[in-house]
Length: 67
Image (cartoon, rainbow, N blue to C red; front, side, top):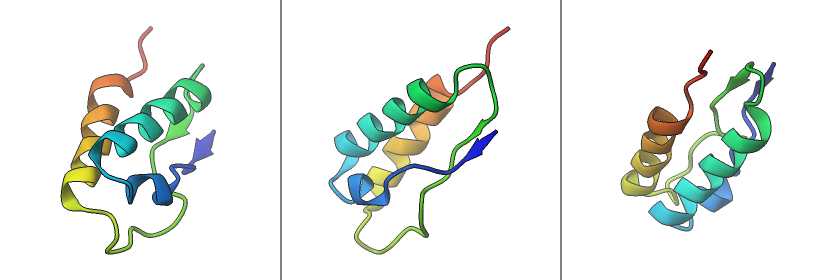
């Protein structure tokens, strides 16, 4: 199992960077199950609400385990 690892600095770069970072981590860490989405630190004010929503939308769309 792995929890976290989403680079908060990438989320600070905007919605598209947030989406790319989230998809990258899902592809690398979620294979076989056991990945829990979370940032590597608390979310600072440098992360816009739009960027955070883009990251969560990517998790919602691509972060489900399929049998």
